Structure formats: structure tokens, C-alpha cells
Amino acid sequence: MERFYLTTPIYYVNSTPHIGHAYTTVAADVFVRHQRQRGRESFLLTGVDEHASKVARVAAAQGLEPQEYVDGIVESWRALPARLGVSPDFFIRTSDEGHKRFVQEFLERIRQNGRDDIYQDVYAGLYCVGCEAFKTEDELVDGKCPEHDVEPEWIEERNWFFRLSAYQERLLALYERHDFVLPAFRANEARSFIESGLQDFSISRAGQPWGIPIPWDPDQVAYVWADALVNYLSALTYARSGEDLVERFWPVARHLLGKDILRFHCVYWPALLLAAGYEPPQQLFAHGYLLSGDRKVSKSLGNLVADPLDLVDLYGADAVRFWCARSVSFGQDGIASVDGLRERYERELGNDLGNLLSRVTAMIARYRDGDLEPSPSADSPIAAILEPLADDVAARLDDFDLTGALERIWEVVRALNRHVESTAPWQLAKDDARANELDCVLWDLLDGLRVVAIALAAYLPEASERILDALRQPATLDWREVAYGRAQRVEGLAAATPLFPRVDEPSLTV
Image 1 (cartoon, rainbow, N blue to C red):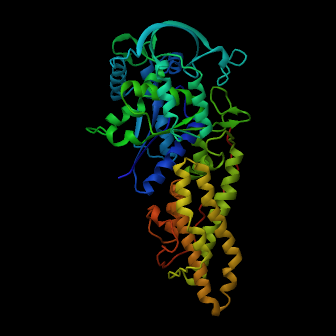
Image 2 (cartoon, helix red, strand yellow):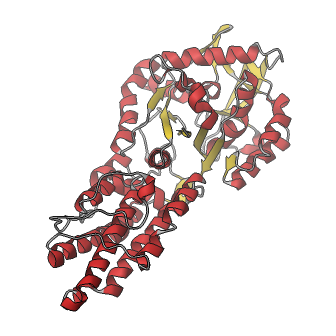
Image 3 (tube, rainbow, N blue to C red):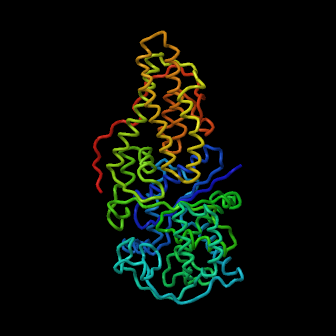
């Protein structure tokens, strides 16, 4: 059986989730749901990164021990995927005993690999706590981190280092795989960084107790990235009690990440894996930022659009999922706004899709008393519209083209609306001599909506189920059903209730 393993980044718990976290989580869920529709055994991993300096500082500011703090806030992070209709196969915490044990084994494997890849030295330089990353002067803008608009701290301490410089050629060889990192311009960015010459980096921190102790030097803890990145592998060793899923899923591992953590995932992580004797992931996709004005949406910058759970309360999970996939071309930066969500809810979900379902079911109920026999036709214009859809959408989603695949489905939604107008069933119903023609039109519209519902199921799981139910069609989401002429006979079909009812003007604060 073909398999598919996809991970989101694990998110820092120094605050509650924001819309940027929802964006990545929804995208990952769409990809995994789609692969399952195609019969692939799939595994979705998400979770939280708890061993960060900034987490420890937030805990201290609240008068709490770090573990006490993360235990309290983690439930808001568990709630995010659940409220968005996302069902991860495992939610990892870096404070899990299984993860901590594996990280120590992983680092020990690197130390014992016979190549002296881990050595001790003194680090002296700048560190941005917001990024949890060491910075050079060249990376700063007016002396500040461009991501967090703060001056980095000067750190000087004796650490354990990883000999990243020894892996330059092996990393460049990885980039000969044309699809190792997507989009291609992100791969070029990572390759340029490698070609410019790699510097060894610290894998430990001294003088801070919050973290995973280095196994051969328990007075130091693993640097947060040497801890967090390993979650993609460690989770497979204990996600299911008594099972080790590494052999089953690691060969097909794919990571979703934001462009701000490109270097850690696309350079440091594959090098660490090679040093520990593991194959790198099969593929990585780096998406862009959701922007508010010209800045990345961020709690530390104070420019949040809205709490994602507030948006779910107002519009529903499917609408937020739709907006995440539709509003910004996946892979690029784009503006995120509540106004944009409201507009797409009303215009595309409410009018394009919701009204189409209402009109088609109302006409079948009115003109055929809710009963309709199959009337497929080889020369149907709807057949021609639906025929390439399954392959087109699947190809786009295989390339992580989240937005393009949804647009391809929406082309069919718009075509079905045009078909209603061009065939005018209300006129056909006035002429008994055209009864067969009316049956064919109504059947094509019903079958087209059925196909749209299945194709949209990864994006809009709740709405897709409601569409199939309203059409009196089986709830199967098998991708092979994204094809013309598969609708079953219907009896007692009634006019559907509004799929996306009107929402009062929101009063969400920025």
C-alpha cells in the first residue's frame, strides 16, 4: 500500500495560537485527507515545541515552573486542530518522555558515529530569543531581528557543537533532487546558503535547566532546534503503543513549514539525520507569510488579524478552512483580513456553492417531486467538464498546490452555475414535450454537485457531507467517484437548507 506521512512544524507555546498556526495546520489536513481519499495509508503529525528559552521566560514572568506553564497552556493548542476539523494521528509535546528519550539516543548516535561530528567549543555571538536562533550582523536590520523587531542578546558560553561544515557536499547532492524542497525558489534559497559555506552550530545550551539534558553532559540541555526537529522522527517511535512506525512512514516523510524556518529544516535537519544514520525526509514545502499590512502576522508584533477560534465561532470551521486555502496562493506571502474571509464566505461559499445546491435541489423537488432516475449522456457538456477534474486536482495537490487545486474545483462550481442559466430548467418544465431534456439537465446538475462535494471533501469536510446528504447520495469519498455518471437514483429529495447561511456583521478585534 502506498503511504503518505506529513508533518506541520511544532508550535511554540509561549502564547496561544493565532491564525498563522491555523493556516499551516489546515493546509496539512487538506493534503492528508486527499491522500486518504486516494486510498493511501496516511499519518498526520502536529504538536508543540515546549523547550524554548522564550517559553521558560514567559513561565517565569507568570511565577510558574516551565512544566507547570506548558501543562496549562497546551490544551489551547490541542483545541486548535479539533475546532478546525483537523484530526491529527498524533499530537506531540517535546516534554513527552518518549520524545526526550529518543532525542538523547539520536544525539548519542551522532556522537558515536566515528566522525567527530560533535565537539566542544565556546560560542560568542548574538541570539534572538524570538527566533530561537543565532544571528550574524548581516542578518539584522538597524541592529534588530527583522522578524521580531528586537535587538538580539549577546551570548557567550561553552557548548557542544555539530560539525555542519562537514556535510556541505552531501547536502548539495540532496538538492540535485529537483523536488527535495518546494517551491523551487525556496530550494534555490537553501542551496545558495549551503554553497556560501556552512558554519558549525551549537547543539546545546549551558546554564538553563529547561530542556532535554545532553546524555554525556547533563549540565547542558539540547539546543531547542536539536530537540524540536527530531520530533518528526521521534513521534513515530511511540505514537502508537507497542508499535514502531519508523520503517512504515519515515521513507515517505514530508514536512510543511513556514519560510522563516527554512534554514533549520532544509539545511540543519537533513545534515543531523545523515550524521545519525537516517535518510533525510522525502520532501519539504515552505509556504509564505500571512501578512497584516506589510508585516508577518505575529503576536510579538501585535498585528494579529483575529483569534482563529473566534473566526470558527462566527463562520464555522469549513469557512475558515476555505479561506486559509483560497485567500493566499500557497507558497507565497499574502494579505490576511477578516474582510477577505467575510467576502469569500458570502460570494463563493454562500452564492457560488450554497445557492447552487439550493437551486438544484429545489428544482428537483418542484419539477420531479424529489424523484429522479439516472440520465447520463456521453455527449453531456457536464461530462466533458467533469472528466479531467480528478486527475487535475490530484496532480496539483501532489505538488502542494493547495490554492490551485481549489481553484480548479471552483471552475467546475462556476460551470455548473452557468449550466443552470444556459439550460433554464424553469423554462423546460413548462413544456411536457421536453421532459426528457429536463431530466437530463437536472441529472447532470445533481451529478456535478455530487462530484464537487467529493472533490471538496478535503477542504470542506462538513459541507461536503451535507451536500451528499441533501442530494440523497452515498457518503463515500473514494476519489474514484470524482467522475461523471456515478450518481444514484434519488427519491424524496427536498429543497436543501442553506449550506452557508448569512452571518451578521462580525465584531472581531484586530
